[in-house]
Image (cartoon, rainbow over all chains, first blue to last red; front, side, top):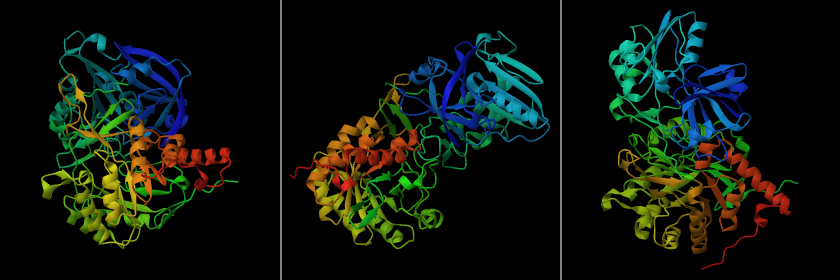
Length: 250
Length: 304
């Protein structure tokens, strides 16, 4: 785990309202695995850091993907190149890559951990199918990549008419990320899938116990430490908040 | 020359004035990156006799300059604390105090008795912000008699230092402070979080599943400085200041206002190195002002 003073190195749009931000953070770029995240803070900014899955990592740079959903993300998207943020990471447990092929299933901003998953799967010699879904064609992340790419839209404007979970083929290894209701649907179909969940988060390092994930075995554990990747069938999806929005009035 | 930052809190000699506050430093093993030399001591995450699951999510929400939390004192119970954590503490060069909790005065006493003499346990911080189940859920900390009864129940079962963490949700903190001083507390910690609430305007429901939560962070600092000062004026035992400390200047405000030491809490969530920066900043301030030790820092503490 590293605490890096990281300048913004670039920004590009990848879907309607969805942007990729790059940072110079060599220690994190060199050690991050797919499914791990960074907790980013800046001044002046909100009190708490904001967690983001690492989207890409190469040549001393990391990237995260975000939409403006609150004051914090608006501030991040308005930053000029060279503006410095404090980047804590890599955090959490990532995906475990096993077998000869993998199906990646992402919905909306759930693309976040997938480019790294493609990298790690290819490094393990696996064949990659990426199924990416969103509400409409304009909301699909243009950067989905794999040996095979399947698009899905709720309105049928591109690819499969329906959700990414329904559009996906079966596989021994399924990795999924997206809104919690989508992951609950993935858990119904593939209890063994590995899913990256999103929660409210405080410290990101296992101390505050704010990012509680309810489990079927009873009790909670920490998305930041035991997660954010879980076996889909282990999570009590009915007890996990279905939508998140950071409540910053500052 | 480096100024002497050591302080005495009752019988406990600390190598510096900056401790880690309960609930923001786990059991002392979790926070990465921090240089431990700056740490004068740790107050453990709050513990009950038995394991507790904690509250359903959402458990935390950010507010202007602060955060609300309702974790529900999730924890493994005292036996796991003794088997898994205390042996590590015994090897450390700073004290770990256990933050103890209960539903009755007797439960607090039993917890103290179970932990008394366990290697690694240097003392207790009593969280009196718990509901008293035997008295219809009234908070121990709001009632001088209940607060004194809990303090006495712990005092009777241990010779280790007993600190009492005061709640700010009272009419006159001096009354509670004097009551627990009279019941045998060695020091006071002022203050715990304020009770707050935040509403989600998309669901028209509270943002926290527990409805309310404890407000911490810079937003509460001036309130906390005042209450710690009021507590310090009311008693002769040392007061440890807590509430929104993120920088050395914040800690120095509490020290000048009459506190013997401070605890850093929420700031650690934001900056894992916060304790180190506060400690080093206090040393730099003393040096810049030409003070040889923290004892030379002027205090503003007119007595009641």
